[in-house]
Length: 525
Image 1 (cartoon, rainbow, N blue to C red):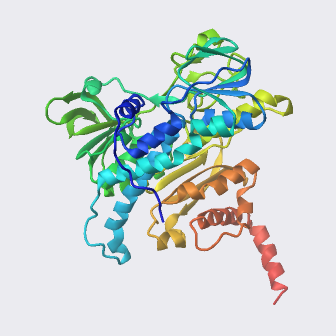
Image 2 (image 1 turned 120 degrees about the vertical axis):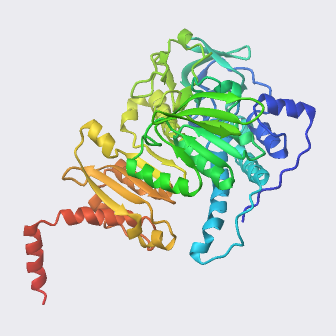
C-alpha cells in the first residue's frame, strides 16, 4: 500500500519567495521538502579546492551520474547547478508525469470496469487537486536521491549552487569562485521550445516546466505538438476530465515511431476523448477576457479551437547560452554542444553528456552517456566507449505504451538495411487477451536471412517493462532464434517475444530439412 504522507500547507514568506524563484508552486509541505533537498535556501557554497579532477556543470541525470561515478572512484569532484538538482527527470519530467499518468489510468480503469464484469457505480469522480498533491508528495519523497545533502555528504562532492561559466579552457567561475579542473563535463540539459506562433506567448502557455504547478483542471486543453510529452499529457488530462484537442503538423504523431503503432495509439486516445488534428498548423492565437482561440489550418482548411489552457510540446532546445563555451574552446550550434563519438568536445579536456549534446533526449540515455564519459575521461587507455554503439531503447508512456529499440521499417529503408519482420499481434498472446490489452502488437526486425535483431517495436500496456529482453539480446548479440529456447513464465505478455522467435525458427525449416526430420521421426514408430 502507498504510504505517502498527506501534504500540509503552512506558508512562510521567505520560503514562498524561494519556491517562486525556483518556479515551484504551490507553497506546500511537499514543495518545501523538494526545495530543501534540491536547492536549499540555506546552502553555502564551499571553498573551492586548488584543482578538481572533474567539474560537472549541470545536476540533471547526466551530471549526477558523472559526479557520483567519478567521486566513487576517488576523484575530487565539483558539481555546479544553477536551478534544481535532479534536473527535468525529477522535477518536471519523468517522476511527476508518471505519477499523474497513473491517476489518469485509474480513472480509465473505472470507466472500463463494466467490460470486465465489474460495476463501479458510474463515472469516476476525479479530485484534480488531490491528483496533483499526490504527485508532489511522490516527487518530494524521491528527491533525497538527488539532493545536495546526499552528493555533498555521502559522495564528498563539492556542490556549488549558482550559474557556472567557463573562463578558459581549464577553469570555470560560479558565484565569484574560480574552479580549476583537469576534466569537465557539460550536462546542462535542454528546455522546451516555444514555436514562433503570433499571439502564443501573449496568450500564456504551459510547458512540461509549468504544467505540474497546476492545482485546478483546465476544462478545455489544447496541446500543440504530438511528440511523447504531448501525447502522454493529452491522454492523461482527457482521462482526468479535460476536453483535449491535440494539434500536430505532420500526418502522424510520434513521427519517430512505427506508423502502425501510432495508429493503435491514435484509436486509444480518441476513445479516451482526445480530439486529434493531424496535418495541422496553428497560424495564430488570440486571447482576451474569454477563451483562448487557436486559428488552425487543417489540411489547408481554416478552423478554430477554443480552449482554456494551451500546452506546448514541440521539442527541446539544448541549454548552451551563458556558459562561456567560446572561452573554453568548446564548439556548439543549434543542435547543442558538438561532441565526437566518445562524447569529447573540441576542447579535449571537456566532455558533454545528456540532452545538451545527444539527439535522443531520454533520462536513460543521459545516464548511459555519463557512464561512458567517466570511462573515456579517465580510463581511455583501457578502451573508449562509443555513442554510435549504444543500443538505445525508449518508451512513450501512453496507454497502450509504445516501446522501441533499434530500427523500425522506415528507418531500415532509409539506412539501406534489408530486413525480415516478424509480427505478433497481441490478440495472439493469452495474457494480453485475459487483461483486455489485445489491440497492440510486437514487431521484431532481423537482418535479411539472419537472426541478428536490428530493431523492435512493442505496443501494449506493459511494453516498456517487456522490451528490455530484446534490448539485452541486441546488446549481447543474441539472435532471435535463440530466444525461442528461453523459458518464459506463462502467462505473461513477454510470450510475444517467444512467439516471434518461434516464427523465425520456422523460416529455417526448409523443405529438405522437413523431409529429414520426418524421416528421423519415422524411425521411432
